[in-house]
Image 1 (cartoon, one colour):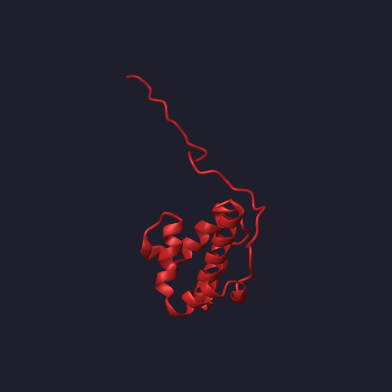
Image 2 (cartoon, rainbow, N blue to C red):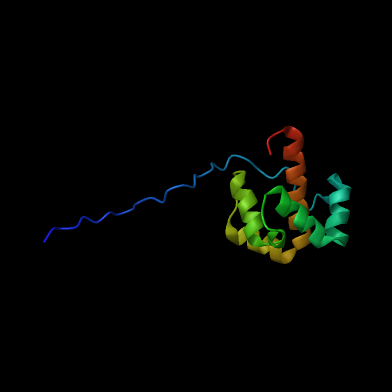
Length: 113
């Protein structure tokens, strides 16, 4: 019989860790810095969620979720945790979506989206 060697994986391939050096472009309650986004988030919540999901090349149904906020935050190295994302999404989903969309718009304007 021949001895089989076992391969032990100590790190997962793929994903890279983004340093947390960025920050949100606006605060969560800074709705009046982009009144159009604020109106859309207030009166057409799902439309804004679909816009965000589309911007991130994700499924439209995922736009208003904790996972989408966490994906965005980690993609751009914004400090925080899944727990923070959960609380923000639970307590004020409109503010959460508006903050993400304002951030996307500002990053697009700066050419870093």
